[in-house]
Image (tube, rainbow, N blue to C red):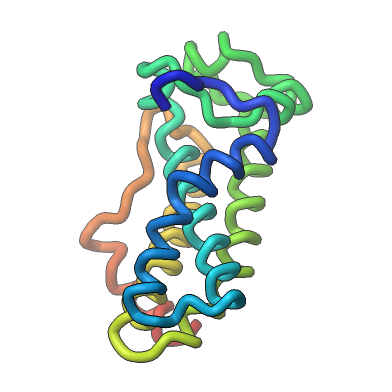
Length: 170
């Protein structure tokens, strides 16, 4: 974060997540002696997805720190430049870009979600809450029309009953 403020493409951003977010999940699994190769893969998907979701909800905050985590090639492909981010302009190009990132993160989260049912007790339950909380944030990003510049989507008290309910049924 200190030296690198732009990411050329998604693989480069994934490499950042591999070194920042994924070790957290790996450490937790190791502490619970649940760090099988299969569990580590699923954990990495969840942790990377959570990191990406945080990037998408924090575009405006990160811009103030001169950071853009949206891959540069995705920005170009969707016709979004840094001037739009600076302006906080939410137009069709921006919506398409962020919708693409939201869906990419959702697919990744859902591909890792089976880990929560594989883990016993409190760890599995807490992970189900984390997964559903991340998915709920993605819905909130969509719900504000991808305008993360004026409304940072977060979980509030009124969101928790639905997140808890989804944790039971998914």
